[in-house]
Length: 299
Image (cartoon, rainbow, N blue to C red; front, side):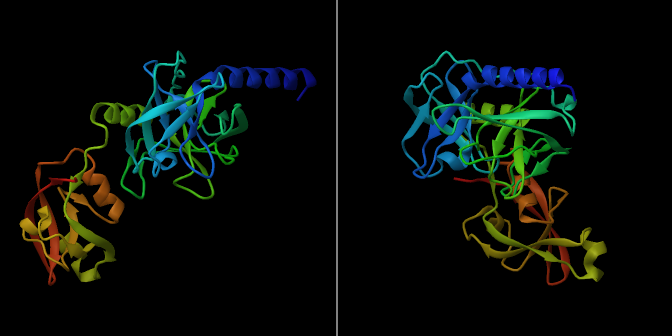
């Protein structure tokens, strides 16, 4: 690569960081270190990670102009590790979203964060771009994105942008110890809209404690699956108990959806199922039963 080309690339990347930095803020809500957030709307909304504001009542936001202002927690969703904050409109504009279908593995990306008073950046590439997935807490993420760019302390909640400075997603350290996982901009849009409207994610409730188990081979055909969730506890006042489900039942599907892990159950209950009645297929004493159960609301 020629010196002129390297110099041109260097100037281009510096320009990207300079354009993005005014839309990136510092979040001071944890005692040990700060985190980062991104300007989400001209109305003063800020998106950051849920784990950054999980245990604190007072949230301060460090603005690009050096001021520190108080912020209100609008809502948070631990299952996607996102939180929406609100402060007085600061005049800072949100970033333009990237077209995620055009983002390919190998594309250069820049992480921009504000762990201290000034913006910091790292350079990398898109290392994985895959299908939607469920987090361990059942949150639905519309596509799987990873970058090989470094994620130093305080970068969680920062912006991942493409070579034109368009927002690809928000960085989080919550879902992997070895990879920089990105919550894509389409998921940010969906979750932020729900948090703004409702202050939280509407979640269904069965009232059970469950653990994944492998079924005996001779029961696979009748159950329609090779695994399920055994009930280790059943809330006596919960929807499952009211439907007649008991301790030791193995739930193999709910509403026709196979349940191979707890995240499958949490994900199913998180998709606006409150108040609906669905069929629960369970194994009890080796027999398959179909039990109608009405999904409750988690308080």
